[in-house]
Image (cartoon, rainbow, N blue to C red):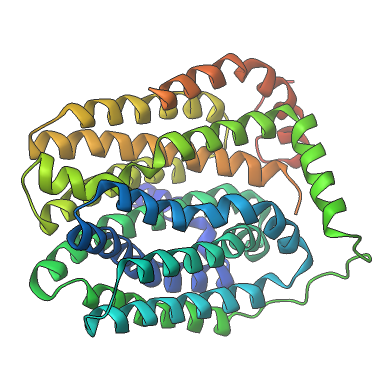
Length: 384
C-alpha cells in the first residue's frame, strides 16, 4: 500500500524529473506569491485612494489591454526569439516595475495616474512574457508524455500561490499598509531570475530565415480560423476572459461595501478562490492523459459562470467564500484543460452561455483531435 502511495505521488509530479523545469517550478513558486500579493495590494490601494469602482475597472483595464493588443505580435516573436533569454529580460523588467511601485507607495507619493501607468507597463511586459513562457515550458520538458503533467503542475503552482499570496497580503496590508506587498514582490523576482540563470538550456535549433511579422500573423490567424478545435477553444477562452475573469478587480467593493469587511476579508475571498483553483488543478495533474478534457471544459465553464452569479447575490462572508471557491475551481480547470489541449496540438450568465455553446461543438472537435492524439502518442488508449 505504501509503495502504491509513493508511486501515485511520483506520478503526479513526474514532470519535475526535468532539471530545467524543476528549477523553473521552484523559482516561479516563490515569485508568484509576490505577484498575487501585489495584485491584491494594487486593487485595495486604488479603492482606498478613490472609493471608486469605476477607477478599479480603469486600472484593471489598463493592465489587461496591452495583452489584448500585443499578444498576437508577441506570439510570433516567441517563435523567433531565444525564449530563455527573453524570459530573463521580462522578469527583470517586472522586478523594476514592482520596485518603482514600492518606492512610490512607501514614500506616500503614489497617485492614481502612477498606478494606471505602471499597470500598463506590467501589462505590456506580460504580453510578451506569457506566450514565451508557455512555449518555454514545452522546451523544458524532455519527455513528451510528461507535457500535460507539466502544464497541470504549472496551473497548480499558480493556484497554490494564489491561495497563499492574497492571504499573506491581507495580513500585511492590515498591519503595515500596501507598500510592503510591492516590496516583497520585487524581492521575490530574484528567485525566478536566479533559477533561470541556473538552467542549462541547449541552443535552439537553427531556424530558416523568417519573413515579415505580418506574414507570421496571417499564417497564425489562418491556422486558427481553419482548425476547429483551436478556434473554438480560443473563442471560449476569450469569451470567459472578457466576461468573467476580471471579477477579482471588483473584489474590494464586495469585501468592504457588500460584506462589511476590510483587507483581511479581501484576502480570505481571494484565498478561497485560489483554493478552489488548486483543488481543480491537482485533480488534473493526477490524470494519466487528456482524454475527456473537452467535456471537462464544458462543465468547468458552466460551473464558473454559475458560481459568479451566485456569489454576486450573497451577503454572508462564509457563503461568499464557498461560492468564490466554486467559481475559482471552474475558472482554473477550464483554463488548464484548454491550455493543455492547445499546447499539445499546436506547433511552436455569459460564461454559462459560453460553456453551452462550446458543448455544441464538442463532438466535431473530438473527431478532429483524436487522430492527432493517437499520432502524437499522448493518448494511446483511444479506440480507432
